[in-house]
Image (tube, rainbow, N blue to C red; front, side, top):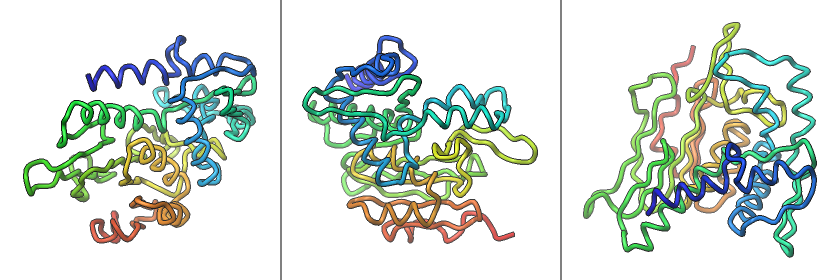
Length: 279
């Protein structure tokens, strides 16, 4: 049943399925589209994080999808990036709570890749809870939600991968009734001209974010943890952790590009001060 719920969420949120609600919104050409209550709430949460992060999280980033081809490993031309950039601005997504409609200007596109996976994990966890399960782990490809204990008196532990040593864990975090999400520049990338180009794009520049290597977020729900991990990665260590510290019930650690680890008090002891030796 939990797997079926994840499949249902994907059918609503996927940009790749022409029949999904998101695809209908993207194809509406500027006309209002009535959406389900769950998609409306998710768009509201995405917009709110856009505001909190100064646009580092932008649900209309999808205009850049056709510009960056990580499989081909080519850096796009600056004018192609600039043309896509003109069609990115979450503030132009209009949400009408009374009519429960979403309106997106023609040529813009919503992409929920930074938040929908977390939402699917939360929905799967809700199904398990409704069926009476009190101790479980939902793993959505590295994004996790953990409930209860692994065994009486034994907490679940979640390993955080070292960003440059594939088979090595940096830390193991004890977790109970919380989500843990890690985003890193090692998930999808190519190298060109001695530089790494990864898939976590700063929607304000159209280029891969440069100040972070990986981010781990622990929060009450996976929806928020998923989106926040992306936002903090783009914001970089100081601004990102300042935002995390202002949010109730959130802990985060940012592995900075210069080798430092910047973390909220709740994760500071768990992580080393540096993830990479100073050069």
